[in-house]
Length: 269
Ligand code: NAI
Image (cartoon, rainbow, N blue to C red; front, top):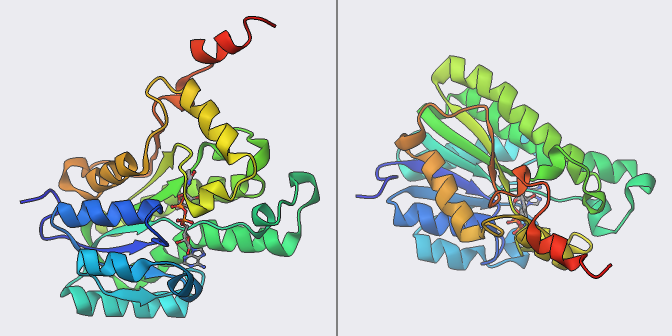
């Protein structure tokens, strides 16, 4: 018996085997959950999600997470496929056209900016609002969205995704209040270390920053596999009273000023 035995979920955002959502799906399967997998139609064509579906014996349901009609159908189909209401949701969705096109923060394209916010933040609100209005999530259900510390501090290379993550965390807090009152549904964000995925590596200077964060953090960077375990613990009944939180999963990066490792690099200067 795994810790998610008997639970039904929807996992958004597995593109390929590097995706954090991919690792969460494997871990959730290992812990006994059943779930559907969802991604944008274009990602289904470009990625390898069908391989994951075979490994997890899951159905893939296309949905653009910015489109509430798609989400409405996704919930109906998931509930029919899994045989009941949903117990957990992973929001592992992010994309910034400004970051992709290497637009500096001081020269953003505002149409792109709105798209970044819609895909990376408002999509969480849309998923929750559709679920709330359809009463699609069971009591003590758990929703987890992935965030990054650029929501709190300046990371010059992260562009408009910084605002997207700040909005995402705020949506988790505020919807967490309303859904908690209505149905004891829990909503949290997990603020993850830099991770080598399609979205992560798309950020300019990622390799250098990955190494820097690894040397600052007392435990080193948290891997995608460790992140998956943490998300699964948040879906489980072991964390039933955790809600409206932004939870750092970063090897200690967020509470470290400077490390001896980094200090030593400046010794000869
Ligand atoms: P990834 O590129 O594998 O996953 C991003 C996913 O978002 C893709 O599957 C993509 O198809 C999906 N997506 C984009 N537009 C969509 C839309 N309109 N509708 C539905 N899905 C859409 O990369 P990764 O790193 O696994 O990203 C997952 C989450 O983790 C993102 O929110 C990201 O910001 C966050 N994160 C990533 C970190 C990293 O360094 N890789 C660090 C901290 C947070």
